[in-house]
Structure formats: structure tokens, C-alpha cells
Length: 107
Image 1 (tube, helix red, strand yellow):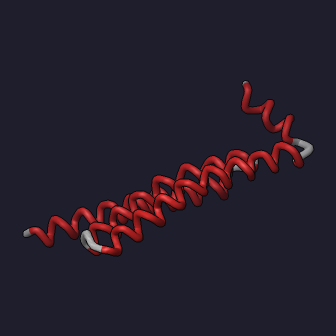
Image 2 (cartoon, rainbow, N blue to C red; image 1 turned 90 degrees about the horizontal axis):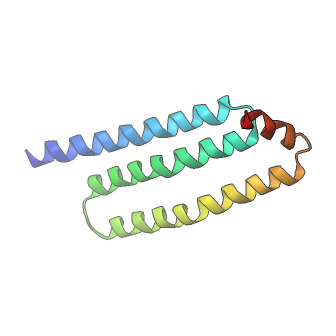
Image 3 (cartoon, rainbow, N blue to C red; image 1 turned 60 degrees about the horizontal axis):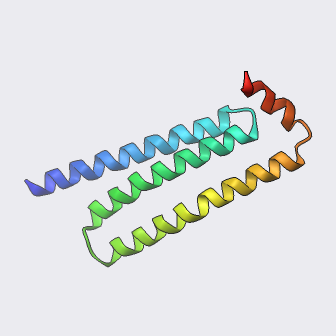
């Protein structure tokens, strides 16, 4: 009985994480402006990676692998906002049409 519950939770978290990742992928390809793409990628990868990591922890059980998964998740959560911020600054300083693109979203 416990194995069925464990598998059900694993499948729920994994499918949810994959759905979030797929939605983020569609958002990155759908949006026209680079800042919107950065936002879609940043939001999707954070939640998607959390759900997939929880699914991996449920699948493997609580052991040494769990600690490694949590370290990877923490590292990703620390570096993802920094890289998104740096990409946003790069776009704002180098894109000559950035001001016109930003004015569209102020309306």
C-alpha cells in the first residue's frame, strides 16, 4: 500500500515539474522580447526544478542522494537569479531598441 502512495506522489511531482518546464519552454519560444524570455525561463526553471527534485527524492528515498539533490537545488537557486539579472542588464545596456520595447509594456 505504501509503495502505491509513494509511486503516486512521485508521478504527481514529476508530471507537474515536466508540465512547468514545458510551459516555460513554450513561453521562451513564444515571447518576442528578450526580457520576457528571461522572465519565462527564470520562473519556469525554479519551480520546475523544485518539483522534479522532490520527485527524485521521493523515488530514491531519504539517503545520501537526497543531500546531493538538495545541494544541486540550492546551487541552482543561488545562481539562476544572478544569471537572469546579468542577462537583463546586458540586454538593457546593449539593445538599441530596448527603450521602445519597454514603453510598450508601460501601457
